Length: 282
Image (cartoon, rainbow, N blue to C red; front, side, top):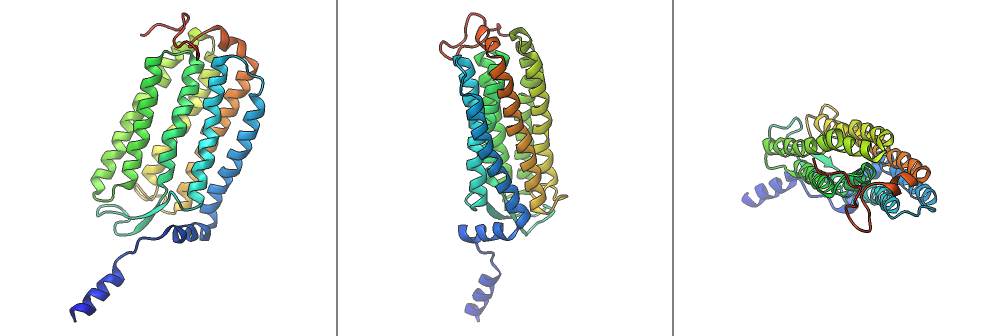
């Protein structure tokens, strides 16, 4: 009888899905799978377009901005391939207190991992465009990486519902640091560098889009589960990525190739570090 009871208990115990099984689940959800492959296609097209756009850049700082911008779709195509293949997806049982407590929820943790690689490149390009100093650039990038890593922790923590939200709010705290630099510090640097017009456009686009990510997490299946369908959450993230990455990068590179002389005349030099024209620390 004890053996029978153990066998029954084992039947009810959720089994960890293998990668092929996760892949099959993704393939069976057409809209979820489409949200991945749409971004793979757009990232691939973006890489080719950006390589063509930046082919004639000559200034070292312009080239550094170009490389940082190009890294965004390069990381994205890797990210979405990992999601589409089931490599960076897991099914996690939500803890007590969660709206879906006891249920296994598909968690796309690979997004957070690759955001920690792609979003610093966006900030690097923006910081260089603004002609900021290395202290502000380092602060923005490290706070951004911390934001992504703590967001990953929020997604993967299943031991406590409260700890999930603690990680979430800790991630939002790091995000506030990034927002302060984007909205307060770098606009002054961009004004001095003569790049305020394009910087302010990209700043607004970045801030508005990036605010969408914590909102989607909070409303999605991993948070309050208001948007319970995983494909809805995935498409929300995918649309945000399209605007915050590919459209952002196109606007930046399109301006850069036409205004390379402005970049070469002022600001941080990729060859020598902080140049003589670099704005002083506040």
